Image (cartoon, rainbow, N blue to C red):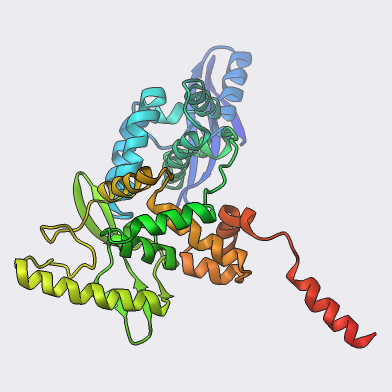
Length: 371
């Protein structure tokens, strides 16, 4: 950043710092009048240049606090992202960001303020992943402030977050899996959990399935819905990303069970008169979508009955584990799980890939034929 100093009259100086151009291509300047000697004016100009370089000046109202800005930012986010994402971000803002630095003026926030917030969070016993969640919200919010000209730079972009050890996903041992399958027999959870085991569906994707999402002719599931608990309401949304919207082939044993489930369901509907409005595959006794939290609790309770730690997500992990241990190509596993990239799949499940090199047998056979 460059600054200029101009004496307008004795002991009266105009300080000017070039801030670049705005989104319309118009040049922006920070201008201030200083009264006093030249040396004092030069020191003040140097301070303004430093502020501009650190991104602490922009078009923001000098009275606008971070908390006020985040309120406005969240209001705009509601038309850009899902309601679930907005609520998750709001919880992070209310619980972690605003109590720490929400009172600070937006235009005066620097990297040190943000890193101090993160340090305080760690000191209070919060995990590194929780801190990274707060960082993700701040980085996105202040990036938008920078993009719209409220800040010259995004101070969160340069803030360092604490490093925590990445937890490896938990999968069931062969014995625990066998005990779980035995405990599931005859339980209403049997089909949804077998379906999760056979497809790697996420919890919300599983509970959001409609009968129209099953292509019995092709033997596939079309993943396009996601059930979420929002403000104590069960809401079915479209999946968030294109990679989440996918087709998953089903084994014939699961297709047979789905056929039988549908026949039994229709008989029950005729007997009770309860019909789900959304033609859901899994619904409660009132014909309404099942609660995501209640579903997780019932899965945990099933596991507790046999001394096995169970969550709905563990069946997704088990699915991925089986594919990778069977040397299914990572790209095929990624597409089946609905990850955005194969790298994501490797980051989460890479430790489950066998150490042996499948290419070695191919190379040996090839070389033996030539030598």
